[in-house]
Length: 326
Ligand SMILES: NC(=O)c1ccc[n+]([C@@H]2O[C@H](COP(=O)([O-])OP(=O)(O)OC[C@H]3O[C@@H](n4cnc5c(N)ncnc54)[C@H](O)[C@@H]3O)[C@@H](O)[C@H]2O)c1
Image (tube, rainbow, N blue to C red; front, side, top):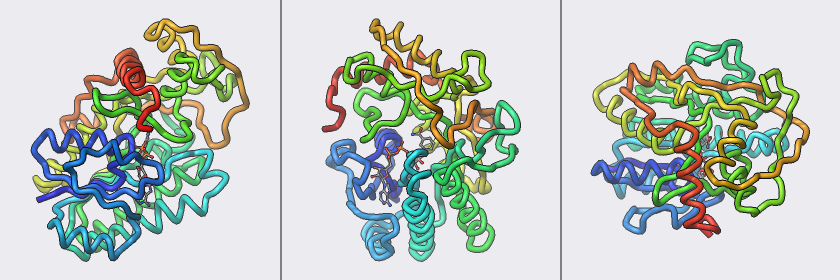
């Protein structure tokens, strides 16, 4: 029975669609293409362009495909934009997310893998961050994801929804066929590489006065292929009757912005000029995962999530696709 992948034309969704298909799964994609790329989804995959909040459309997809499970990636995911336009985030990520869950339940779909985020922790009270750490987001994006976690938990208890909420740290890297291309691009790795390719004169570094050894913010980067694999493992876990769960996906290693720039200089052989700017509102100083639970419960082993592999893969993809998906 097919898996419905919402946001399957986006960065992580498109890689997951490829991996699910490679495992012999049938996949159906729903994406409004607001931030995704039609060409990131193989022509053979049934594709619906529309909103996850469209209950009529969800019912139609379920009727046409006898959906077994849903992997729900679709969301708006820019921290800065969420600070300026919170209403847009709560409508898209929460209101539409709830409508999707209602539609799935009505159609008898009980298994859900949800894209959550380390942004639900906010400024962490403990590093590395385990699933038990306090969740208190520092921006509306994080709150919208935390709200959906609470919705899933409540629906699990009341309506028998079975879910795994995967809290990703920073997705990065590319496969042979899919890479990271957002418009606008706010993520560090593609921006560092754009500066290496002279697509931008300088790389903006937001804040060099964080309480970290070199003053720049520290993040945990996880390769998009490793992330995608965790979704296939989470589906297997749910199919085998696994309990509802919240699971971090990170490499367990933190790199500062400055360290990523240095590593990118080595991988690309280009100088990468930088300019220091003010911190971005809502950006915590340090986010590094404790990913033991993912290993223990899902058997997840992130083999590609070292910084050189991440940078090299996105560098190769971008060289092959100088305009990204355009
Ligand atoms: N990229 C990261 O580092 C990261 C980290 C943590 C969590 N996440 C989460 O992972 C998911 C995927 O992230 P991504 O980087 O691939 O983002 P993305 O923007 O590349 O993909 C999201 C996709 O969802 C679609 N979409 C958004 N709202 C929709 C709606 N209402 N109806 C239908 N389609 C809609 C967009 O068009 C896009 O194709 C998001 O939920 C994001 O919050 C991402």
